[in-house]
Image (cartoon, rainbow, N blue to C red; front, side, top):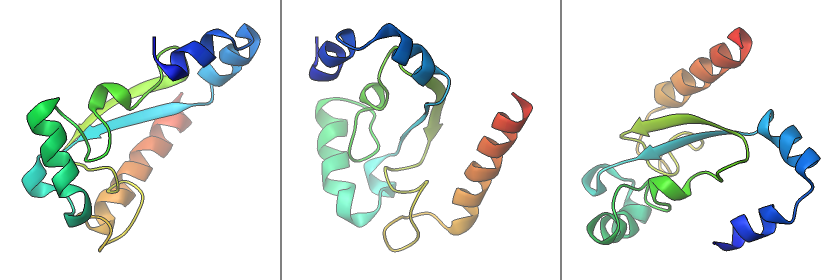
Length: 110
């Protein structure tokens, strides 16, 4: 049992139920050759030794089981691509805008 799971087991179950409805995860991974320069080395290390990752976290570590909703895994996005502009991200603004619109539509239709 990891640190987060241990602490989560001590939490009030009523609070966990509230969090399940308000926390959402979008996980991602990207090949090292496509990752933004400042996390490319960590992406390469994690890929070679552990598996798919976003340059900072393994795909399986990008959410906390039992808390929130996992919306799925997006391919070809690194840790920064969904939230920051170039040069901190390797993706153009239209990618971030498309993700934001898709999330908005998901929440609106729920």
